[in-house]
Amino acid sequence: MTIAGFSILVWMAFAFWIFAWWLNQRLVAIDTGHNMALTRAIGLAVPLIFGATLFVIWELLVRGLNVPTVLLPPPSMIWERAINSGPTLWADFQQTFKAVFAGYILGCGSGFLVALAVDRSPFLKNGLMPLGNFVAALPVVGVAPIMVMWFGFDWQSKAAVVVLMTFFPMLVNTVQGLAASDSMARDLMKTYASSWWQTLLKLRLPAAAPFIFNALKINSTLALIGAIVAEFFGTPIVGMGFRISTEVGRMNIDMVWAEIAVAALAGSAFYGTVVLIERAVTFWHPAVRRQ
Image (cartoon, rainbow, N blue to C red; front, side, top):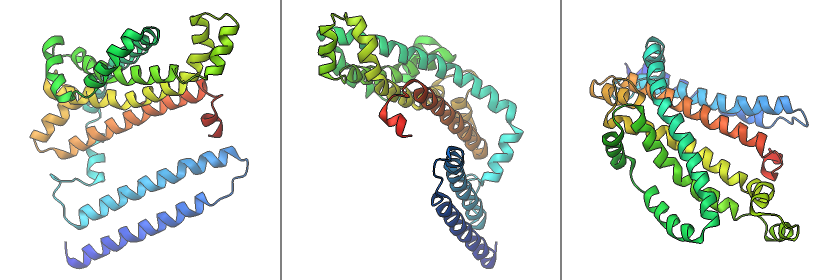
């Protein structure tokens, strides 16, 4: 590309950025009053415009600078590869998400149950919590090969990695949440002769709900990351981690980015689902009411 052509693309990218910035500034300055539909529409439009701006600038600069596609392909090339490789991407997603879903349910569920036991036992609290901090610091690249040796090459070994990654965030957050209830409220429950279970269900679990959902949101991203990384160390010839590792070796970087895009969309959808459930369950919480 000539210097003149490159200059035109750079100016186009700069002009598009200025226009998108001006448009977003105008949108956020609109007084919506009590119109919730308009507020939600603006709240959706602003990040969409910002994201589209980044993709347009990415496309223009990569083509203007003649960046080799092996280093960074343009978004149009990634999109074309994703469209042409739809069945492969879907098969990879299904294989990986089996491990994500199973490990997420088992890890979060077991972490929650153990947190209830820890809350009742000072011995477990003093002995297990320091161990939990130690295990939570273990690198997934060191644990994944061991899980593959124990549970085989299929999705079960990746689910085991996800369980290990999601168990302790849920344990720690739930224990902290159970201790967050007001002491005067707990004393009031005692004056009513409430049992431990009654106090747990009617006072302490509702107070711990924001902590529990915080762990669920953290684990929604950790689970996907853990499953993909675990697939680097042994898997059937399908899976997002397997595809990324294989296509990097073949220098098919557009396919790698297509897999990354699918992972990002899946992780965002998973996280968003947890957020919607949180708002429905903890509608009474001040933080949710403000939103």
